Image 1 (tube, rainbow, N blue to C red):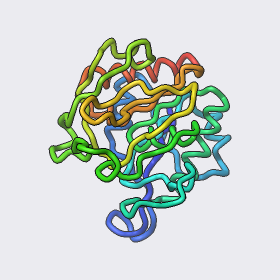
Image 2 (spheres, rainbow, N blue to C red):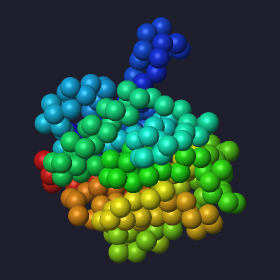
Image 3 (cartoon, one colour):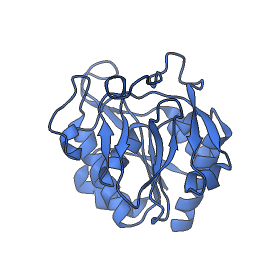
Image 4 (cartoon, rainbow, N blue to C red):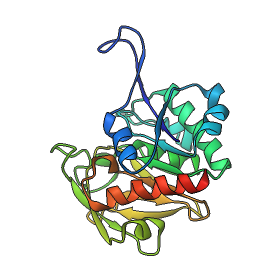
Length: 236
């Protein structure tokens, strides 16, 4: 069983009351990779029960940001949008999963939450912090690639994909800035140096990617999800 974190919205649109949401292709892609997905409501008191049920955890993306105070910043960029309840839950379940050495996969914003849980920091707004940055919030559809990433050899990501580069979609204005040892950067954008992937080689399977492999834009995407599902199955 694979746990997926959901997004949350206040009332309006789908319901007049607060509601959870998740794109179907997250679950569909994991099912296609051989997994059984389970969407997790934001109930911090149930983290231990959730972790008893699942064999692997996926922290999904979303149009919001991690509170900069959580990684030691004393200022907050004007572009930063918070969903405190979601972030509190995701950090709690991530830390619980890491304590159990459960396989974890952070996707897009989920990679950023993973980085913070591992002691890293974030770039709050790429256009203001990275000179000559690419359009990391790509103007073309998310079903198409936005740019290419370089994959570091001798990493879990390189072993999984068997590739030196991958075409990825790009839907983020923040990125990982630093990670502490033993965490390593396993992918980046050559043009502007923005970090695109991280991993902790001391753990069973601890991987973050800044793009969305559930769209299966590049063969690397399917390989990542299959490797995660296999690691979860072995852990279970």
